Image (cartoon, rainbow, N blue to C red):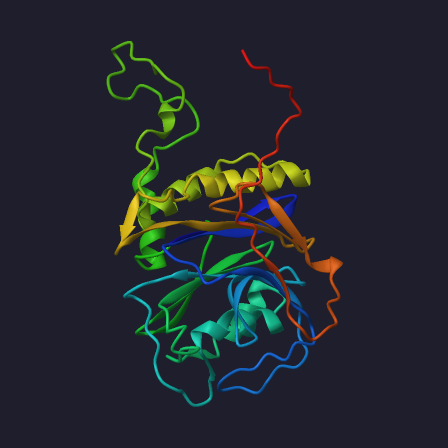
Length: 329
């Protein structure tokens, strides 16, 4: 499963944890402006906004998990098993396959407002990329510096909802998560006050007791609450290094350790965590095996090209060792 976050700290930052029990050789992928984006039921878009994110390249096509375009608009796809509904072709609508939705939006849109207008005319059709990459149940968070929305393909249609929290996880549908927050109104970063028995001298015995009741399990509903609480109470450093570090700490509050969630014969884990400075076009990431932050700068590349630019994820642990002398005892 997954968790995505939109975070404002001077610049705008957008990223996610990808939690799965497998991987598809994902890479940081830059799609330049002249890469011809082909769509199954729409004409090719030959020129568009450049974008950066993590994708699997399949037959030369970037299957993006999350991405940000050069205008600062970001989209992440998250698993939505059992709830996503993809219909057939509809007349007078843009009929788009789920794997095409991220480039469909980021090719053309500068803002969430642009994306919401485009989605109002978009119909998601149940078309898989190929037998090797079957149809996946998904929903999406779309964010810019000012606003976030959630797009969910349900039986009643593609439902677009304002996302004032700037967080998305997985099941149930998003309206449940917004309602579920109300169960945690008493949580606080402050020490709790004694409302249990004002006549008794009851004082906190530990720091952090104002957040007692904050979920700590790995279910999608609990991760939503934990990520939202952590993000909304987070300090916001203005300098780049501090903001990026803080963003990864937010994601770290809901990351999954291998061995805690069994899936078939394997275990789900946080395959990668990402943080994109959407103002500067810098894509930061860590992997499960390598917790050192790596970065790719979109604007250091030739963005008027036509070929995908790919940087494989660094999955080997990078450990900085201090220069020391060792003596045998």
